[in-house]
Length: 165
Image (cartoon, rainbow, N blue to C red; front, side):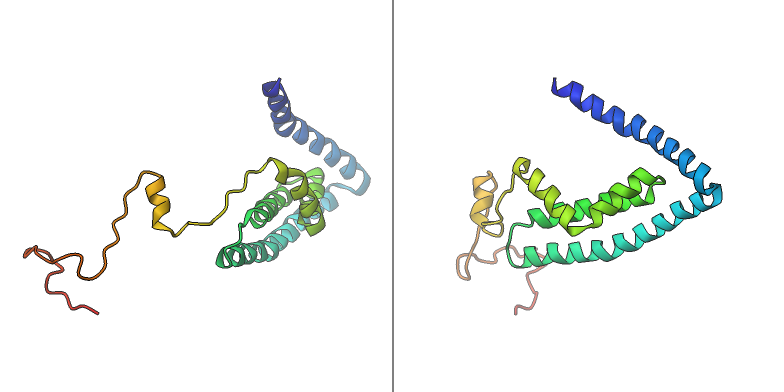
């Protein structure tokens, strides 16, 4: 049953939306004319590019802040991905994709969408990321030596005469 639903969604995305966009183009073009319709599509693409740049930079700054403060950046990643999708939708010609794209640029819509999706997202904590013991748990081996626990006995080492400090 799941595969049938996925196939239907793919069908709608790849076939249904372009057909709907063409229909909307025809209706809007017959009401306001071809040239104004084309200008609106170009204008929404330019506005979308500007919004993508502005909100994309903000989302990346939030992501960096989360990482710097060792917070799990799940919501920041979700927001950044949603902003990227919104930008792509606004750059894609069409009134339906523009409406969805503009909606995804609204922070309240992104928060609402995140609340709906976050239950199915598995968030893994960042604790222990820099801890060498984490590597040991994954089967990797880390050897951490202090001064005096090793000797320089290799006379052919390129680091033999290297200054220390």
